[in-house]
Length: 130
Image (cartoon, rainbow, N blue to C red; front, side, top):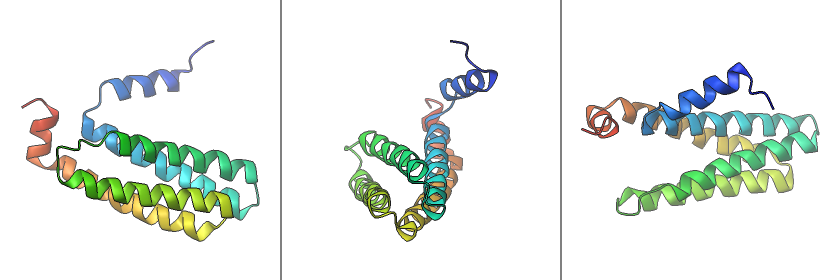
């Protein structure tokens, strides 16, 4: 099977990204899939809504599993990620666009927060092994 140039680029960018950049990529994916899932609900495309909301749920599960429990904030983040995943599950089961939109609001806010945090000198030092 041939790998497209886009897929090669994507794989390369993941391999060369800092942890902060990878986190932003995960949020970008979750946001993109949640939007597509909400669109599927709007257009009554059950397959599209299910496929995309399940992908967003998987990203949230990955984020939950990647938390380092030695940091106090991890417990709070775990609860927030779990709530967003719950919203995505309920949006999918009930085909409720409002639940997907609430999840999207949280995802967008978290992405902005992590983006700002990744710009801080202490996070850059940590990402660069310093």
